[in-house]
Each structure stands twice: as C-alpha cells, then as structure tokens.
Image (cartoon, rainbow, N blue to C red; front, top):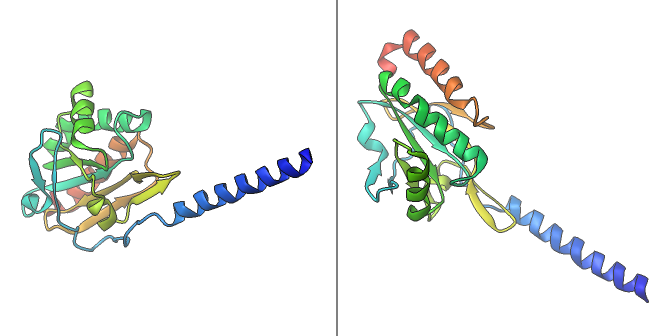
Length: 189
C-alpha cells in the first residue's frame, strides 16, 4: 500500500512539474526583432515616475536599451552598477542608456536609490515593451525580461542585439563595439 501511495504521489508531482515546465515555453515572448529593423517605439515611466519615450532620441543619440530580469538581484545589480560606473564613457560617445524590467516603479525607485543609478530604469509592468522586443519569458509563475541589449542608432534602427549577456563584462563589450562602430561610421552616434 505504501508503495502505491508513493508511486501515486510521484506521478502527481511529475505531472505537475511537467505542466509547470511546459508553461515556461508558453511565456508570451512576442515576435523577435532583428538587426536592421526599426526599434518598436514606446513610452514607459522611469524610477522617478517621469515618462521616457524612445523616439525622443531619434536623430540625436544612439540608445543602449538593455532588458534585465529583476531589480536588486546579484546579476542585475552587477550589470546596473557597471552601467552606472561607465555612464560618462557612454555619454562621451553620445550614447543614452535605458534599462528596462517588468518590475514596478516602487522597486525601481528603491533599486536606483540603493545603488545610486544615474540613468533611467523603466518599468514595463504590463509587459508590452518586453513582448514587443521578444524578450518576455517566464519560469515557475515568474514573468521577467530576458537579459538582452539592443543598440539602436539615431535613425531608430536596431544596429546590434546582444543576447546571453554576462553582466560583469557587458559594458566593456558594449563600449568596444560602440567605439569600433563610431570610428568606422561617425554618423552612427
């Protein structure tokens, strides 16, 4: 009898895990966008509640639009602090940095204050922008934006997409890419 109960419990557990795992694949990721396409425009609120519209930077600046999973987690904190520490280097190249996650304004405000972030981190609570950029994902009932960075030229076109980003070295990689691109094509920035 005890063996039958254990077998039944194991079956229920495995069936539940299978359902949970399969729901990960059903996360609404939206359509992937590609290099050379126009970046989907949006307006989102930053950590101070101020609206930021992507198209405001067209014709003027290159934009680094980086998506990250969650405020105040080790990898996301490391990445945000790297952007903070290198922000003057991005500004010297006429590059604007915008961070995006699905966290709310209160979480963003606390995160920005705690780590003294000096660039906008945008709240995508309704997942609209993460879905539009094809980075929305989920696991075990937790929805998040996959760690992905888009380099958007002043003309509004996607110039480069970085996936599977290493939070520790990402700003160095971006700055190397931007310097090489801007040197070879000064009209980019």
